[in-house]
Length: 138
Figure (cartoon, rainbow, N blue to C red):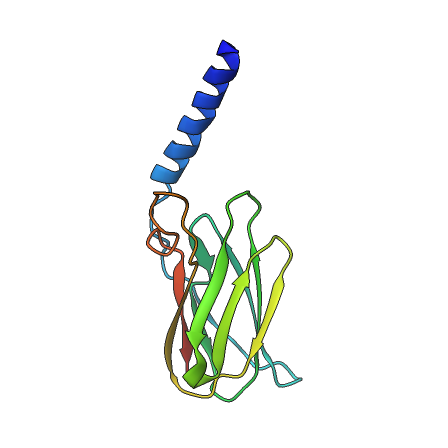
């Protein structure tokens, strides 16, 4: 029983230290979408480890967009949320290691923030730890 408590304590300390030292903000990674022959702008994104890659996505207004978003392997849950219904963009999707396809057509030029709304117990939110980005509609 004593060994199990030590192992549990060691695992808890490892988890706390991993969370505490994962706060390094990600540098901007910009992706400018191109329009495929079928008229759709496609973007592949990865979320996890408190980042989105890319974290700045540039698309054209009034052209359909298809985001393929997945999370990196691991047990920490993540999502991607962008609420801008006035611009034709409104989604909240739970991420898995399998790509989730998000389709929309932006109808208004502007900068729209997306983020992960998850938070583990008393720790800093995923957004506050750097898991956010911007969709730029031109």
